[in-house]
Image (cartoon, rainbow, N blue to C red; front, side, top):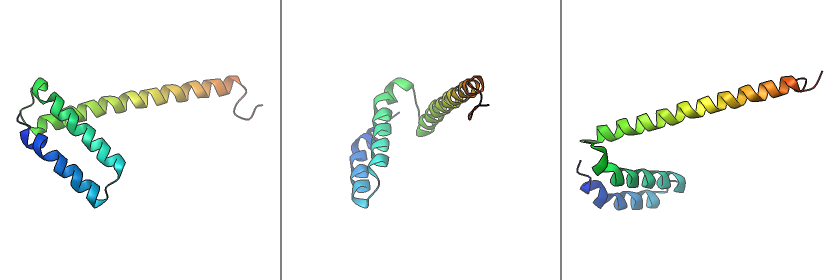
Length: 91
């Protein structure tokens, strides 16, 4: 996939966003994602930005599932611990 336009013009986008008052956090996240795309474009076999989008959605879906699973596991352990300790306020 040809990413030369992105490589050459993303500094203009970042500069515009800074001037327009976008949050530093948002700009930082966008910059990180652009750098990832530029670094991975040759090795991922992407043909178009739709392929990039599918990679992002797969990655973030996997992270969300892992996060939900971890939260459920922590919640279950907290409930079991509270029950063993006599409930939240004791018996």
